[in-house]
Image (tube, rainbow, N blue to C red; front, side, top):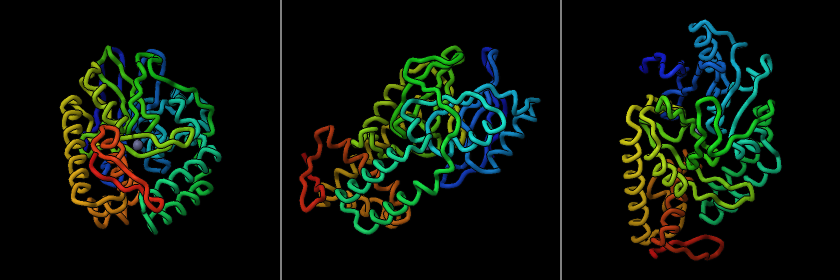
Length: 327
Ligand SMILES: [Zn+2]
């Protein structure tokens, strides 16, 4: 069980809100941060009662009220980080900040979401995913209307690399999500980084289209973000899930080495004559190909894109599907 305590450095006090989470994430973490200019909420949990109760309890235990919140900052757009925003701003209207790439996703822009479904439809077709791909596309299509109620109502003030808010410098760390950012407090040498780094599991570098529908090489981005983060002057990371991170540099080295090993494995399979994305996924993940289709394909495509951009593999199109071989 995670021990919840408060953290204090240089006039900033952090009150972690920790609620249980599934899918091997252990916990979902979001944070109250008290400072001279107010009481900031960094991320907003899941859209459920357990996150809501976690927030209310954290406020009450530390003699705050919901009305004391002065703004909400998002590390990225995923639903387990923004879940309570409407429930908060409905009664207490405060500014909401996120990266500019979060906006079409948080506002659930219909055109963008339709483009995103078309992107995955073509992608799964080219990766030769067959029935599993079609099932996932049906699910994504239904989700557009089904999840419409989750769109963020409040106007979003956009953030970008190099901007500052209070003591926090904004650093873009794309990879896990294209809009993933870190709030870095260099005076305190700590940062809030959402799912950029998770202590107990590797963060998925989820494949996504950019705003024009072109595939983002998310694992290439993620590796670059990890490497760039080694030089950031922080010794403590408030993570989006699981334990808080005491030695971020050591964790980054470990993550980079694991990514390298996995890439070698994918390359080895290609060398053994397995040529399509779906076949590679089945060999690497067996039954998880069906049970966690989107995650598994994202992982494989990430490695394929990274290997290809390194010049280690090449691909040719046959009957609508990409076939990979060593470069
Ligand atoms: Zn996430």
